[in-house]
Image (cartoon, rainbow, N blue to C red):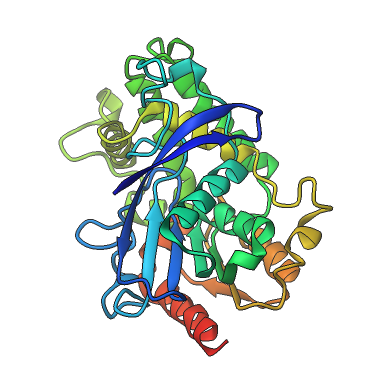
Length: 342
């Protein structure tokens, strides 16, 4: 589904027309709406066949769509139906290099307008992992009166220097592609694929890569003769896979938004920003092998909300927030049970 939200004022001072693509599951009964916020290169298809969290969200699942009305919008700046760099500007040409800089707070402002359109005054819960967790935290800080319960996983209250550094290398890969043209790109596929390869290394753990690939060559290839190691082939595959479904301009826009994320900015710090939400049902979870968003960052969020940090045990690193569906689902169900209990 798609909805035209009209002209939206951004934090940059720009005003742009925004259309949002979103999917819903279940039936709204007035107090059972749950917002799910997706990560960087995901989209609104969280459940059902091919859904990125289909083992958590669905009939009889931890987020049971027979009980809850689930809403998942594609983020502002994305490329899966919501207005972004590749969509037409008012003059009919793609926004491209004219696309304004948007922030996580802009993402959430647009989601609040979608909630208004759907007639949802208050979410029973807002859930998100990674970039989605940033948006969930912004919901808690910006619209605490509209959120009853909060679930954040494998995210941070503010982007760290190392996270910004990793993002910088990815942006450099895209912006250095000869096809980038300052954002008016003709694909920039090599740059986007390289950015994804860099990112994917941070998504997995060193131990998993070592056990899974070691120094093995790709079958039929000899690294000493110019062939690839198996781990190189694995990264090539993920780079090529993203190019087939994602836009380089969206990758740049969303990455810059993540760089600028700081829930405490202009609010007196993280603790002050989340003070109005403290005491409500909240789950903050870390992946023990996550080297991109290490557990100490989630510990900061948990302390600000006054809850114990939950830890998901996984060999997969940051991607554990997508792969460890049994553990994650148990935490989601616990949060929703607490919300139901009031």
